[in-house]
Length: 206
Image (cartoon, rainbow, N blue to C red; front, side, top):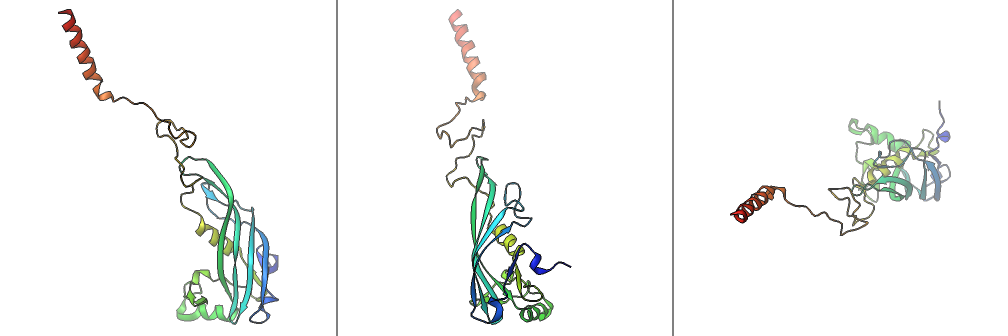
């Protein structure tokens, strides 16, 4: 059976969880878990993520506040250029002690994910609650990293806000020449032009 401390996403909380009011700085690197985005935009599994912030102890659990930095790959939805840059996501989540988690899980027959819980400053956000290990000594942030990044990824990534996209006729990148255009004639008048030329020719012969 795997031990909590063997997880690459485990953070030891033994010191900070000893009594309320304790706090410690978090500055750790983790491999990106699977399932963050897709080929259009996402984070490749195993890429290095950074979590910086603090873990603070309160009466009924631990509060983690910090920033996740991830190397996001994307493709601009207008010009199709590849985008590669670090993405920062701020998080504030709650790790309840086992007794708190149990009570949240049994109340009205709902799990802690389903039952609203006052977790930070009176806010009710059950989706921001994550479990500690059975012994209470470790917080596993795998699900937290995945959830936070998936939620923060834009649906339509852009290389820049004013990206002009591609020419609809030839696929030219309009960012390289905003004045690019095509002179298009309306073929619907070709028959009339031919008829006019024919009449003028007949008049000339006459």
